[in-house]
Length: 296
Image 1: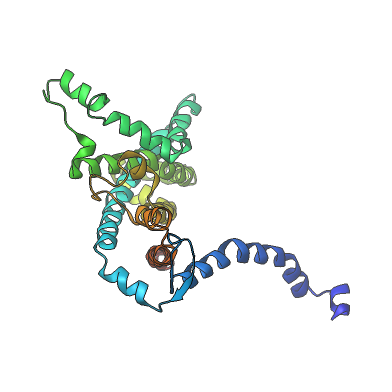
Image 2: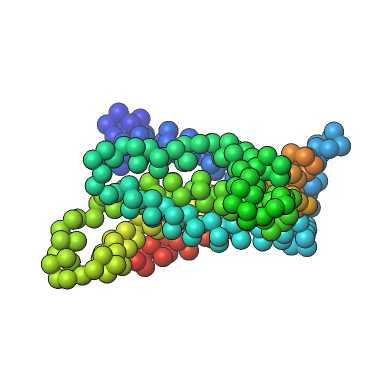
């Protein structure tokens, strides 16, 4: 064995070089997920001060199935994903095409594209919470100046309006990230394709659908994978804007996990909710990867 280490083969040398990376992945990925799954089979509460483990098998998962708070949070999370992912894709594509235009100075446009993505999520939530504030908000002031409304609207105190405000904020924040990915894809499309299409008499609209979108599809899939996973884990923006209110009408799965684990100190049930959210993300990622494989 020691002789092999002194004069290793290519395979042995590769394994030795990769060993630290595998160990690091095991420590920061495999162990936390394994611990999470392990805790989900126990009744583990810290509120009593004892922190005792009590094995309950799949009872936590059965409780999740019957929990109306879980289904409410899951519904909100899915709706946010279905609204904000396509919305951010459309806005991000528009921003990417704008940034890809032949400006003399491109850096101001690209800086404007980068800024929303660079802002912390909680900061973006606070900014838009101020925009939609009942008494001091910019939205109500603008609507009054334009004589669209006379009375102030309590945007964040009405379930439907609060949900719409959160979705708008997430689209604004996420569209720049998707725009940056799509901009990189746009710059990889050969200009000769557009020149040949113009010679053949294709309109700009035809070039967009027959050249830009097909050539951009790999970048779109990558952007959708990243954005969908982060949308399923939405926490910061709704938490800073409404804290899940009014009632629990804007509460997401991540917020329910936080409330269960941090506020109620129910580690076992919170771990079960986290495993459920992890499985949902895993399934969605698998669907996207299968779509990528079929496209290839």
